[in-house]
Image (tube, rainbow, N blue to C red; front, side, top):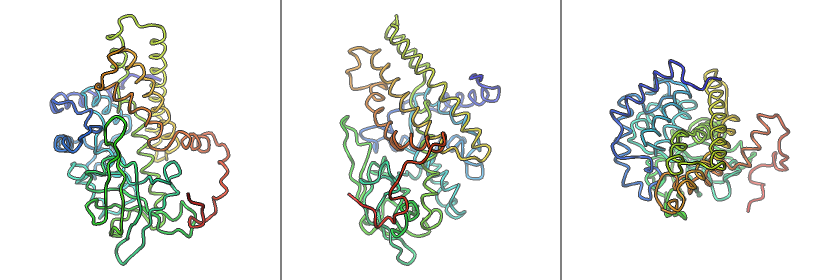
Length: 395
């Protein structure tokens, strides 16, 4: 396969690069999503999102009728590469534009699309993901947050955890248990919740690096309108699989984190004569990265043919965790004692990369999905597969 840009891809890359050279913020924005004080940069990032929307760069994958450009995954990868080249990293609008938006487009009604998508695209509304719970992380379908129907509302009580941006998000996309009398995957409903609703308490979680990237969120009798339900009642697991697929595809893009060319140049700059161990490590990262490019191309083809690349997205997620960890090791080793400084892109990647083995589903869960859905191996035995949720043993 030719990894060079096709003429059409080269033209798109030139267009993206020209736009960024003219409009990209002068202040590097790569660390904004991971800042220990992300609220302080929200205005700057929101202004950048407005600029992206104004010039048609805010949502390349969205259909044109919803404000996107209707492009493919390859163009998204090129755009990510050019963002990285310009020093612009992960956006705090990714949960909305990259995950919830495509889910609303796929499963929402027209009223929901017209109400939620425009402010999501412009950056006027920040979104957060509210899926994981203290007892439901890797086995997400075991979630227990309770929602009871009361007239036109759902009354929600329970706890979510490991939620990025919940401390200043305007809306969240939420999975709740609406029917405990059926098996765990069948009694889940997908809701969109106003984070300013009465009864919501957000508590930031400080990590070892001093950041507050994650939050735990408590719901105490929070009322959510049924008009904010995406998909059918008790069919939220089907809707959630769309969100999870886009999350894994976003995670599984090397260009979101670093450029291989930049890594190799950085290593050569810091170590004029690369030793055999470093050359071998660079070659390994290069090989893995190109293999991931092939998988990205396959996923793009599947999407263009209306196929579901959920299993392939799990492979992508597994690959990026390994690649980022190996690349961060190279970046740190190239600096020698300078790596002890608590600043710099590679220091951040080194501290953040272990989380990539857990984010979006642990490696053990992803490997099971790949084994079953890609390799066709038998499903892992589950003694409780037909047991109603309310009768499952809970810790």
